[in-house]
Length: 329
Image (tube, rainbow, N blue to C red; front, side, top):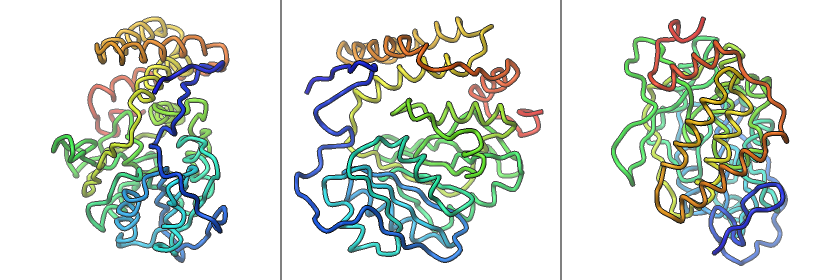
């Protein structure tokens, strides 16, 4: 199926980007269902589209947590009767349903605004908590007020046994530059204070953009030590969109956040990295289109770069995790 660029530089397809789904309808469903546990210590947010079976396992793992949590599922216009399954099988889960798809960045912003918990856990609909202790373990890692987010350890069992986002030791607070969207927790008030995710990014790269703004505001991302989240990567993924928006948004990240003094070098390195990421002709062409769209979008968005000090800290953290008091002043 072909891809085209619309007038705003966005990638368009005839099919939904999180899988085709079924053509059946689910009559009698309301826009939302509001049932939640009493006095939750946190909110677990799951944004979903047309992954009904994977979503079931994600919810079951969230329900098994040892501390009271609100579970908030945002259904981004599913057509496979996801909402019907939620009503029938998980009446205690809070559901916010959109009739049409707005994309997961928009829906994550919406979910965090609606969440009742002060700490927001976000997992994808194809991820699971492997133990009932992960929320409790991670909440304890917000012990320092400078910690704005925790990157929860995770692995991708269908690819390898490599563990990502794991702190080198549990005796100190180690910080990093970024977290993955499917395995993290953050402070709701801070998220809202710095403006949340930029919705025009649409798909890919919103976490890194948020994290550098968080660092500019004086907060850090802590590497976690909790039990693992398993990201059981769904086959319902459109890698063309990941290639396209990965490149487009890498360029926009530089334009929006990188100080003038180092912007040309950063842009040149980012462009080269994007082009060399895959030399398969079809993927290279999609990535090239993403780069062009990023450069063309420069003057649509106002620059508000971080300080040179923050930028340098961010680059150091990207190379190697640091102890908290080494990474921030």
